[in-house]
Length: 172
Ligand code: SF4
Image 1 (cartoon, rainbow, N blue to C red):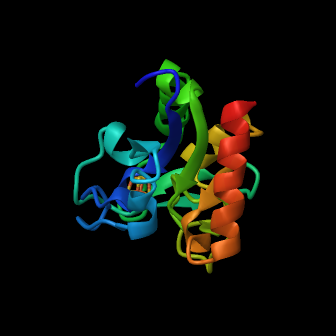
Image 2: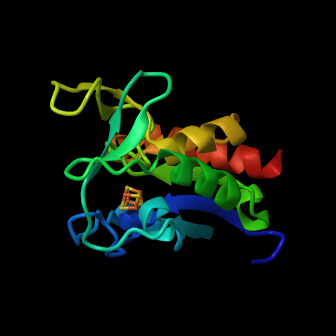
């Protein structure tokens, strides 16, 4: 990476990397095309880098809206503390502090910004109001960083606003 690069963090699955819990990916052509427009994309898969295998048990948010836990749906394994520690360490790295934006996979209990299923307790009907744990730490550590939730990628205006924000941030 050189000093003039404009770096955007990206949930790895959006780049076509086979990292999802179900052994698939969430490849998005617009995100990939940002490279041709001169941006450097920095992939991060919080779940994989935390040591979870592919495929893996589905995890979900469980508990209070402000402070839910990250729990394995079948086993009940609690990943909360490990994910929070991982996110602080990963997002504190020098390459991450040079980011000018982040594109996050929607609905993910790790990456989703605001529309993630949250169960008050396992087995209950979920609300659609959670923030993924990795995304939560990202928003805490970089409150002014432009972020784009992948559900908004099809909206041209949202895309333009995001790119404009990234360019402004990089010159800030
Ligand atoms: S949503 Fe995030 S944690 Fe889940 S597969 Fe994609 S990059 Fe990994």
